[in-house]
Image (cartoon, rainbow, N blue to C red; front, side, top):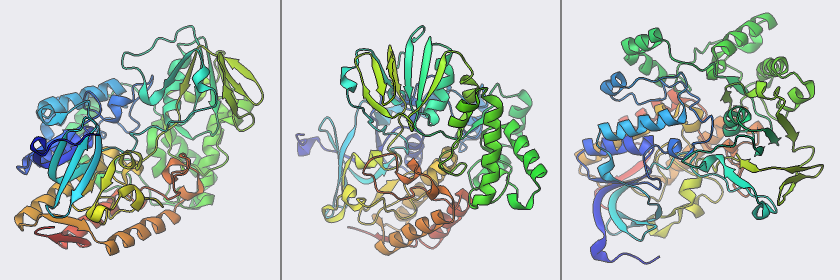
Length: 540
């Protein structure tokens, strides 16, 4: 890549990488501080994950009213969500509305990827180079790259020989697809697959689902939001939002303070059933120890097992759809519409890849070790390089030329999930070591953006130019994140939370598991103590 001439380098206060919800809100806050900013976005529009993920059935798994910005009462008043769990198109429309309302696009450069970000010790500035060779020089570099923005490029022997159509849920054609009457093979039963499979089953002639690992899923019970619920939200929005920020998950889920083991079997059954009927993630609030005690967790797993068996008519299929290798919700819990019932359809078949793994893709379809299949199209829903994928793909170099990817060779290291020692003025939004994917992402995005903005304002007020995490604070935070994870059941699963879905990726629990409420309080305390654990200076 040819470097831009020095005269072509654009000087700016802050570069933001990514124009999803975090990048857009960061731009708003930077403007409020009077800073000049440029957002760099690979896509052709705002929206982040909702720009890229357009597969059939794609929708949010946190209730729409809570998966939205809370910083503007006027914005909340003027936008009306149509469904309890908004579909992708509506979420993208919401992102576009926010961009237009706050005139954001004039500071967003689309169709552009950041290739490199290098810190210069002498000037205390970052030089950011795009894939077009253009350069920007900025005091602050803010990574708003998203936690699930880089799909894993899973492949199979012979995949290039397939003469049918090959699609990935993470890069679904923008114009959509009509697969009516086709024979379709579908690989993957994570969250994307659980959303897409029921919709595709209604369209195609035959859908063959290839499953390696079943996942737990709760019903969405989706539909229009009743007027009385909308009115109650608008009348009490400040209270609802404040309560959400002070829960472990960043949304309202009616948590109890009781152990599952203190309840009788009849009480547990009634409590789980009540929450199943509400749907979504409400089951997390049933008992305090579902996520920390194997015996308590087993009661939720048994309830889910019975629910699957009651929906799926074929006992053998129901058994295949029931997880057996990880505790309940130790992998990301999914939220679905008619997922389990879809396997009752005559045109849907489930193939167990544990019993007969995929051997190769053929010219006409797919061959497992036990059978060959002919398909018109194959769909891959094979997951993401979560939380670190986007950052690893940028050549980030900090103080003394330290390379981020090398620094993270044994797993990501951050302080608060916000900064990395040796990389001054580089901020991560919902980075590794923060609640992020274990929470309502909008709650966590707003908290991080506002913390960063407050930090920059604090620095400006004290005429300070550089801030970075101290190595000692980073070491302590990494140890704390690791320690907290061991008190939970998350490490019992080979999940993307652990980096286990990406070959060669270090195994480390990536998010922070103590809860949004605990984390927010810790971040606030750090700031109140004049950004304890950070090194601040007037110059590099």
